[in-house]
Image 1: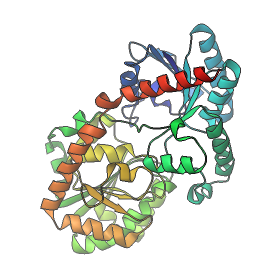
Image 2: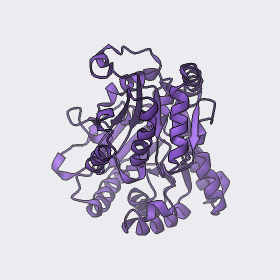
Image 3: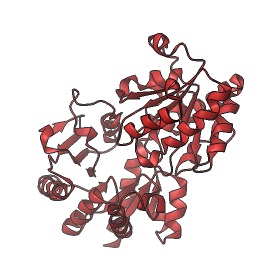
Length: 389
C-alpha cells in the first residue's frame, strides 16, 4: 500500500540545521511508514529555504513545494503530486487539514479516482471564537465543511469531534478517532535536572506552558491568574516556552500586571531538549480557547506532570478531571487560579496525579504501540471505496 500525504506543516522537510521546535514529526512519519509499502509526503515550504526532495526513512519520502505563498502552494503541491501519481501506484491520499491541503487532496481524488482521508486536528470548524480571529477564517470554514463531506473518510483526534461530525451527518463508519501519538519513552525517564538548577533553582514552584504564542492559546488567562497565585506562592515561576505573534503583547501584559520578575519567556526550544523542561515543572497548563488535541499536553502527562487544561477538543480524552489533572471551563480565571493553588498546596496530590498520567500515557499515547492504526484505517477506506465501484 502506497500512501500520499498532502501536508501544510513544513517540519518533515526541514534539514537538521533548520529544525528547532518542529518536534518528532519526521520520526512519527518513519514510524507510520513501517506499516505501509511507501509513504510520500508533499508539504508546504517557503521557496527561500531552497529545500530539496529527501528520503527520511527506508520508505518515507518528503517533497517540499518551495512555494511563494499559500496560493502558489495549491499549484505546486498539485504539480508534484500529479507527477508522483504518474510514477508510483498510489493507493490512497490523506490530507493534513480540511483547508488548503484538503483542497489539493480533493482535486487529486477527482482527477485520479483515489480514496481520500481528510485529517481534522482541531475544533475550529463553525467555532465563533475561531471565525472572529480573522475574516479569512470564514472562507476556510466554508471550504472545510464542503471538503469534509466530499472525503471518503475523516480522521479526527478527539471523541468530541466524533460526536460533532456524526451530528453533522457524517456516517459513523467514515470517522476514525486516531490522535497524534508521541514517543512516550523519552519522557518516562527521571531526567537530570542539574542543568536547570542555576537558572531556575531559586524558585519553589514552576508552572509551565509549551506552545505557540498566538491568540487562540489564550496565554493572557494564565498571566492574569498568575497575579493571584503569586499572592499566595510568591516564589513561583511561570515559564513560557515557544514563540509567536503575541509575544511582545504578552511581555507588556506581564509588566502591566507587575509580575514580570516571575515570568520567563524562554522562546523556542529544540524538541530534543523539551523533556528536561517537563521534568522540572510542577504543573503544566493549557489555557486555550480552541485547540487540536495538544501534543504538549500528551508529553506533559507522559512526563508525570499534573496538568490543567481548559475544556478544549481532545482534553477529556487524555485528562480525567480530578484523577490525573484538571479540566476547567474556557476563559475561567477563577477556576484556573483555584486549581493551580490547590496543586501547589499539595505535593502528594501532584505526585499521585503525575503517576496516574504517566501510566495512562504508556498505554494510550505511545506511537510504537499505536502507529499501526493508521495503516488499518487506510486498508478499511480502500476496501470500502473499492466495494462501491
